[in-house]
Image (cartoon, rainbow, N blue to C red; front, top):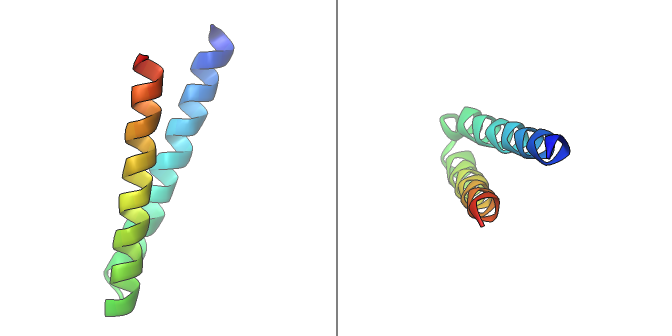
Amino acid sequence: MQRQLLACLKDKDELQHRINAAEAVRGSEPCESEQASVLIRAAFEDKQQHEQERVA
């Protein structure tokens, strides 16, 4: 049980790191902004999937 919780926390930290990195890129250039939006969307989708798996 503790290993599952630890793995879940590590996954959550990794997803948050990806979101933060993508948001940091978002404001600089138009093409980078589009790329950042794609990265943010992918990170949020991964986060949602992870949360659904955790509940199931």
